[in-house]
Length: 307
Image (cartoon, rainbow, N blue to C red; front, side, top):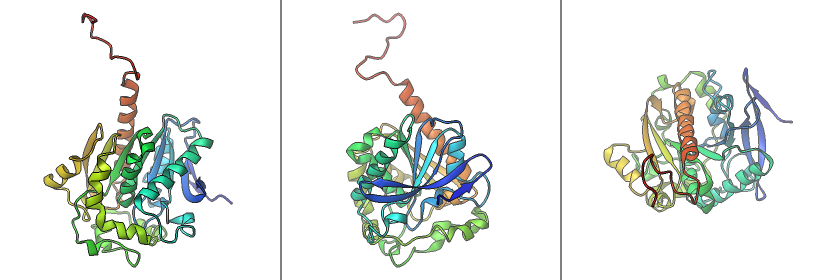
């Protein structure tokens, strides 16, 4: 039976995507008005589940219900090695394999659902690595864009302090000051925690080396957000310059979210961040609408002679 997670105006339900034979569990919320303007695919971080983007600690904090109320279908996916795919992938997958599996799952969804203007990825922490890898994949050029929080390219901790299959690392780095979260966030958060798959944990310390190679193949707009209390990644001027430098994206934006810790979508700032992420999606859609058609020259300003 499908479990319904209800709000006043939107229902989010559990579904399963077929990613070329690998089952990917997910949560979906669809706009009540009918055809979606686009599909937002949300990708959780390490040691979490799809419900990370569906906080019920307070009304308005869920990305799923907010996106659906604004006319988008929002699909929050359990990454490969989590949820229903864990029995099939007991060790998880390497990043390139995760990207292929995610694209297969999205393709299955698109074959049976209206996707409007296309697919936009919202990703957190290790999920941001997957979002970048998915964009670097040849199929990634069809994405509308990426909005990534809680991920940089330079670690602020030693490699041996990163979360792994036998632990989630220092919990304080995930959360920051407790005042940044509704009290219920911690009680509900216990149901979102999952083991970090072995292959994912092994690749974690390699990210600073992997990032430039992936970034050079990203050809869609990207926005990074760093919480004020981010403690896993460096985000000083030098670190942000290093983050921007290798990206081939047509647009790269970097934002800072005050009054927030690493787990942005579970905190008081969740709605603020989600509105900004969806605002970036709106910017990407506007840029697509305003772009000249392929194969046509842009119109000449009035009075300019044609050659």
